[in-house]
Amino acid sequence: MFRISDPVLRNVADKVLAGERLSAEDGLYLDEKADLQTLGQLANVVRERRNGNWAYYNTNIHLNPTNVCVYRCRFCAFRADLKDAKAYTFTDEMLRERVLEGRASGATEIHVVGGLHHQKKFEWYVNVVRVIHETCPEIHIKAWTPVEISWFSFISKLSIRDVLEKMVDAGLGSMPGGGAEIFDPEVRKQICEHKADSDVWFDVHRTAHQLGLRSNATMLYGHIEKAEHRIDHLLKLRELQDETGGFQTFIPLAFHPENTELSHIEKPDGLFDLRMIALSRLMLDNFDHIKAYWIMLGQQTAQLALSYGADDIDGTVVHELIYHDAGAKTPEGMKVDQIHHLIREAGREPMERDTLYRRVVRNGRDWTVAGPVCATSVR
Ligand code: V47
Ligand code: SF4
Image 1 (cartoon, protein in one colour):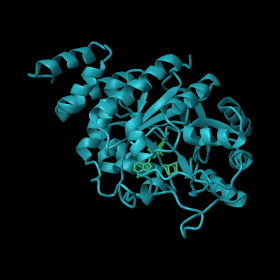
Image 2 (spheres, rainbow, N blue to C red; image 1 turned 45 degrees about the horizontal axis):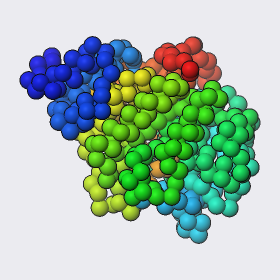
Image 3 (cartoon, protein in one colour; image 1 turned 180 degrees about the vertical axis):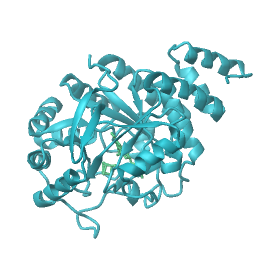
Image 4 (tube, rainbow, N blue to C red; image 1 turned 180 degrees about the horizontal axis):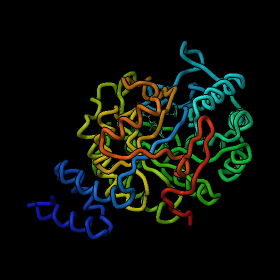
């Protein structure tokens, strides 16, 4: 299975098989030189060691409360100016409607991220979480990226910790992985000059983990970044995870260029996507889960990704806007039996999880959770 003639790659493979940590140099070699087959086989070994044959998914729904945003990230097709025809902002009634729709479809999670609306006060954003929570307290609220939390801190003059505590009081359950993009300051300057930098991103996650919140992490690849930036990004995440243990899942995000200021860049192809899944599985040895976000990858690449290091495909989703505004051709959601079919066709066994990776047990429309399926404890 592992007949590798390249001596450098052989050495990296031996480290992986022995469960040893890979260095920055190993990562660069894997990214730039390794053939996809070896990369995938090695990542699959790590994936099966951690998660066996399981492929996790959840029943979730998305809510982007507003697309009006003060920032102008060059990779973003979702944002709008206040007076744009496509600009929108949810009312409380619309929030309730979306949550009730989620409940009716059996959702255990609502995923909430959006633009930074310059006319909205901090209380408005707290109210978004409160209204969702009061409408349906059993649905887990995974909301706000560090970019949003740091904006809330700026407009409220509260510390990051105080902002997070107020959100938790209102019903926040965990945080998604967005806003990370690429941590390297030079790349960040070119793609999202004004928004929170990597120090802020890490500060918010560290504080969230200290408060007992779990969170995810992402990396936006396939734009202007190079291999060295991707490896630097992964190592910085690995370092914080060593410190706190609070990350659950890593999600590599493929750049979708349509309708963005970077539309001249070609969208990464399926082979690049699989390389990024495998590379992250190998470098992030302290993350339990690697997610192949099917809505972004497409169903077929997501299926293949389950043998290239990924063990999770996100969920039913419903109402995705960020990728569809940027040209994604995937459906806006998938039914549970379609997800089961997709996973089984890829040779894996589906397991529904809640946001905190506890097994979901269903009885008609009712559901309960049955303890952790894969535990990393927050230090
Ligand atoms: O931070 C925006 C990315 C992120 C584009 O935690 C784009 O479970 C590609 O973080 N092409 C938000 N990417 C989405 C996100 C996420 C998604 C799924 C699951 C989870 C999770 C988190 O989307 C942004 C940015 O990196 N993004 N525009 C684009 N045109
Ligand atoms: Fe605004 Fe987020 Fe889009 Fe950047 S990625 S422009 S912060 S909505």
